[in-house]
Image (cartoon, rainbow, N blue to C red):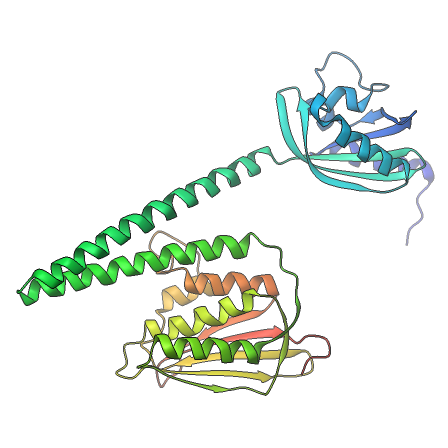
Length: 345
């Protein structure tokens, strides 16, 4: 490793400090109050008015709203104790109150750096999307129920077979929209949680899901080939993943007798594998490539539903490998490679 003179190291640090796009400030605690020692250009642009130097100013007086002073005091106490801070905070800027990811790092007694990353737009966009999703799901669910109910009345009252067939088609489409709404709700819940991976018995989950699907789809044949128990690194979303795969393999299967084989097996000391194979028409190449990331999403190529997307997103959270194959003899095989849990069977 090359050893740089102290002055050169200091100059390199100052250059980095001043050129960072995030607002960074160095401060010292004086009688418990953070006093600015120096601030980079991004901090001055964000929080200063450009008329005078910020050095020597109270950091809290400059940027902390009156209703957040107690919160700031707690951060200062942690800094005085030599502890780091990390939180989403609201601070006063030259353009009004905004929200930041705040991180402080003590460098010596009563002396620290603080970094402020503006996330106002991201948080506002998230809130707007949350409201939009709730309104859309609520309205969609209510309207779909009305459509399905009216279609069933038409089918019951009509004598014409063509009208009955049209009503049945409306009912089927409405039910599909209802499922899409529920899938969107599941996606929002799953993606809104931070995964905590722990040893999870995939065999037990497969058994539970297969039992439920056999009751929902009595005309289908579902067989399993799994060890007594197999632990993988996962969380509660593993059941959603298995449900989505088996449901998709049966629901979109056009064979006279839909058949699905679910296999879980050990690959090596570090890896376990889940395979879902069916005798259906096969997932279209364009949809398969979009979900697996081999093709970009476009208005023409985006997938027909959220089930496979949910599988992709859950596997990404697990760091698992996902592949979708169409064997020469037909059908589809979805293959997922999991990390085996420590001490797993």
